[in-house]
Image (cartoon, rainbow over all chains, first blue to last red; front, side, top):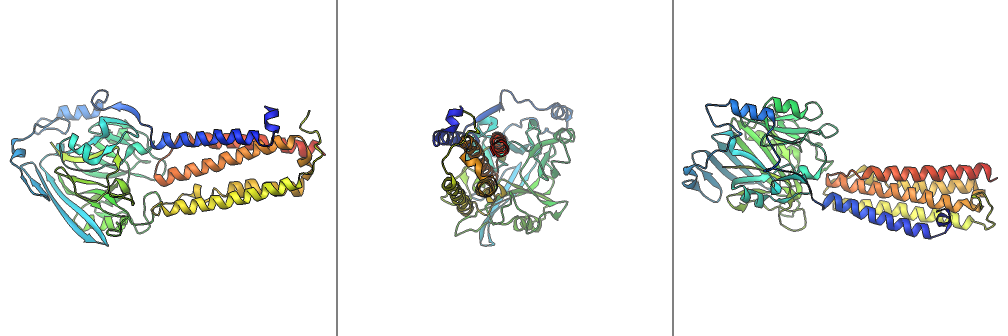
Length: 319
Length: 139
C-alpha cells in the first residue's frame, strides 16, 4: 500500500477510477434504479385507525369502502372539457394569464370516496414511476393530476388511501397536505405534527410537497416563496378546496416560449380568486400533468420537448 | 524506508504545478456550477455554488502555505504519500459537493452522500497527520 501511495501516478489513476465508478453508481442509484418497498395490493393494509373509522360509518359509504360503479356513469354527459353524472361534476377551463396557459378544473363530488390517489405500478418505492395518464387509465380515473412524486425523496409523509407508507418528516419547515375521510383539505407543518396524530384525526391521504398556497382563506406564500429555491416561473400543479366536496385543481404550462409558467404567489392568487379556503402546491416542473377522460389536457414539459414525465403517484377523481 | 527519508529532488516546480492545477480545477468547478445553473430552471444549490472552495482553499491555498511554511517536506519520501492521500480527500469532497448540488437541484437526496464526506474527511485527516509528522520530525 505504501509503495502504491508513493508512486507518482498509479494511486491517482486507481483512485480516479474508483471515484468515477462510485459517482456513476450514486447517480444511477438515485435517479434510475427502482426499489420496490411495498406492494399496494398485497402488503399494504389500512392503518388501524383508518379501519376503525371506516367500520364506524353506517349512514353513508365510507372513504375506505369501494363504491360500486354507478349506472349513471355510463349515462354521464361528457364533452372534451366537462363531465357530469350524478356523483361527479367536472368543468375544465383554459385561462391565458401571466403569459401562461392555465388549466383550471372545477370539481364537485357527492362523496369523498371519489377523490383518490394511486401509486405507480401499485407499488410504494423509490424510482417506481409511471406516466400520470397511464396510472389514470389503470385506475379508470375520470380526472387525474400528478401527485407529490414522493419516490424522489427519502423524507416526507406518505399516507395513501388510509395506508401509511412513510412516516418520516422532511427536515426543516415543510408543509404537508392532508385530505381527511370527509374529503376536506388542510395544510400542516411536518415538523410540528406526526403522521400518527394525523392518522388519529382521520387523515385519509397525506401528500408531502408544498408549500401550502392558501391556508385558512389567506394566501400563505409571497413573491419570494419558492420550491427548492426555484426563483422562476414554472409549470405547476396544485389542488384547492372551496367548500365540502368542491375542489379546484390548477395546472399551468411553463418553461416554453408559449407559456412562461406561474410563480407560487400567482398560483395562490388564482385559488384565492376562485374562493378556495385552502390550496396546496404539488410536484411541478416536468411532472405537471392534467389528465381528463383519456386525454392529457396540458402540455407537460421539462423545458426541452413536450411529453409526460413518469412520476410516483397521482391524485384522481373516479369510481 | 521511512516517510521521513530525504528525497534530494527539488520539488518547487512540482508544488507550483500542483497549485496551478488546483486553480484550474477551481475555475472548472465554477464553470460547472454556472453551466448547470442554465439548465436548472432557476433552482440553485449552495453545495454546487461553493464546491470550488475545496480545490481553491483545500488545494491551491494549502499547497501555497506548504511552499511558504514547510517547504522542506516536499523533499521527503513521505510527501508523495501525503500528496496522494490528501488530494484524494479533496477530490472526494469536491465530488460529494457536486453530487449534493445535483440532488438538491433535482429535489432529491441519496443516503450515499455521507460516505463521500466521511471518506473525504478521513483522507484529509490522515493526509494532514502525515504532513504534520513530516513538518515536525523531518526538519
